Image (cartoon, rainbow, N blue to C red; front, side, top):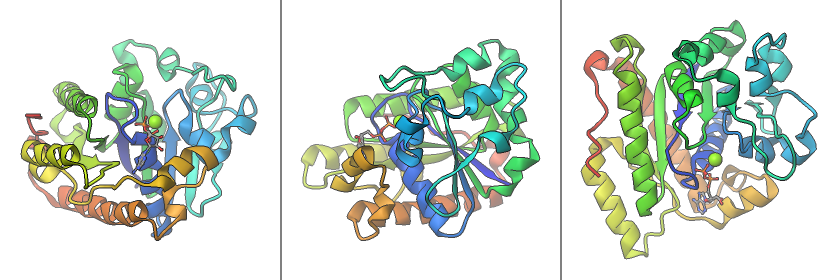
Length: 283
Ligand SMILES: Nc1ncnc2c1ncn2[C@@H]1O[C@H](COP(=O)(O)OP(=O)(O)O)[C@@H](O)[C@H]1O
Ligand SMILES: [Mg+2]
C-alpha cells in the first residue's frame, strides 16, 4: 500500500520541486519503489527528470489521464526515470515557451470532483509503489483540494524569506479548512515543514529558523537543507542533488528523508490520529 505525500506551499520558489525530487531520489536509493506525480502545470519535474523539452506533445500525462472520457490507464502514462526505482507520472507541457496546462481545468471546480485523485489512486497499479509523492503548484485550486483529499500526508517546504512563511501559513490554513470537511479517519496528516536553502552564516536565516521552531515545534524537521550550488545545477542539467552524494545538501536530504520515514512510522503508530490537528501556525 503506497504512502501518499502531497508536497505543497502557497508560495512558488520555496523548494517544493527540489524537495519532491530529492526526497524521492533518496527513497529510491533506499530501495523503495517511488512515483513522483508532476501535478504542477509548469511541469518542472517532467522537465528535470524526463527531459521535458523532448517530451512536449509526445506523451500524455496526468491531465490526459484524468480527462473526462479518457481511455488511458495509469500504466500508459507513468514513465520510468533514469533513476532506479523512481517513476514519474508526467505533466503535459503545451509548448516550450512555458505555457502551462491547468489540472484544475481538467478536474473542474465542482465539489463532486474532490475525490478524483483519491479514486485514481485506488487503481491497483498504484499499490505497487511504496511512496507516491505529488509535486504541486502554489494555488488553492480544485486540484490542490483533490490531491490533498487523495494524500495521507502533507509536507511543506519553506525557505527563509517572509513570503515563504506566508505561503507556509496559507498551506496550513488550507489543510485545516479541507480537513474540517473530512471524516476524522480520512484527514490528511501534517508531516511537517522542511526548511530549505538555508545559509547558516546569515543572521536572518538563523532568525527565521528560530521563528519556525517557535511556531512549529516538532513539526519543523530537525534536518534542514543548506544552500547548495548543486541545486542550481539541477534546474540546468536535470541532475538531482542526490546525484552528488557528498554535497552538503545531499547529505541533509538523506537525513531529512530518514526523518520523514520515522515521522510517518510514528504517526501510523499514534492512536491520536483522529484528534490530531495541525499547529495553529503562529508565524
Ligand atoms: N538547497 C538549495 N540551495 C540552493 N538553491 C536551491 C535549493 N533548493 C532549491 N533551490 C533553488 O530554488 C529555486 C526554486 O526551487 P523549486 O524547487 O523550483 O521551488 P518551487 O517548486 O517551490 O517553485 C530553484 O532555482 C532551485 O534550484
Ligand atoms: Mg515547483
